[in-house]
Length: 200
Image (tube, rainbow, N blue to C red; front, side):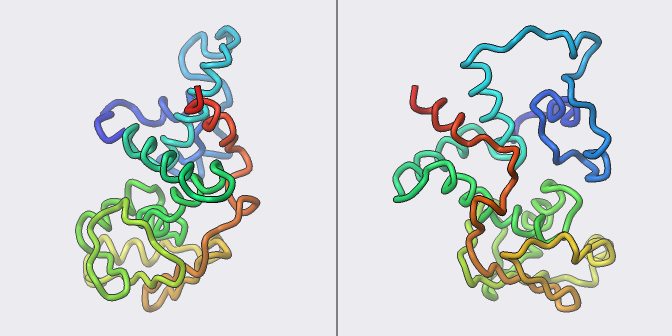
């Protein structure tokens, strides 16, 4: 995903990814694939269904193929339901936590915040978007005088913050309270298909 430079909206629409460049677009997004004959494509094979679901989740969290495979093998190594653990790992990424807290319209924006060194985890600067946040970690945003950060602060919608995250908007402080449960995550994800894809 890191090397893809084409039109992401078309790519996301083909895979059924809801996180487009503007969240408002998701409600009116057409369900068929892009292109003149997108609605007439033939029935996909079992392998294509498995692959498509993997790509859908991978594109949603904007991770590379190598990273995604690494997360899967880590999830398979841990005790518990592999698919749920995989989604929990992806949700624990620093760029995703900032996105869930409303500090960006897209994960690309929150990734930029992290890459530019604006994020502190427990008081220490972290500029790696894939950094995995642990329960109880506190994330603060510095450089509040920065015009981009000011824009972010004005756009934060507290109503969209999930239950496993606490946000202090005035202090720009995020507390990752706990790991989310499966029922709190996207119900459209069919992670069992991903497990079957890697099991072949």
